[in-house]
Length: 64
Image 1: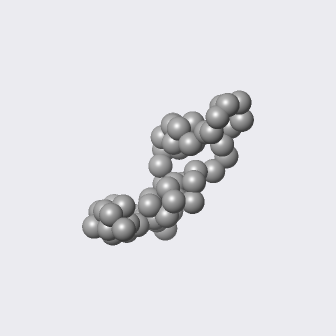
Image 2: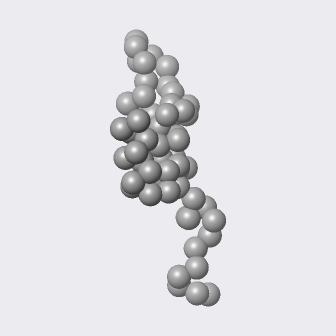
């Protein structure tokens, strides 16, 4: 097996690429008052931010 080959899941940017503990961190931060229900998915903005393929595109999204 080639060391440089990666599966599609490893190459794809986005929320599901993050490790489980980081996913939970962002979901807990995304919770809304009164914090009694758990958020299942991150906000739409955050998902699109993580899906950017480069730092330049992510920065451009934040400034616009």
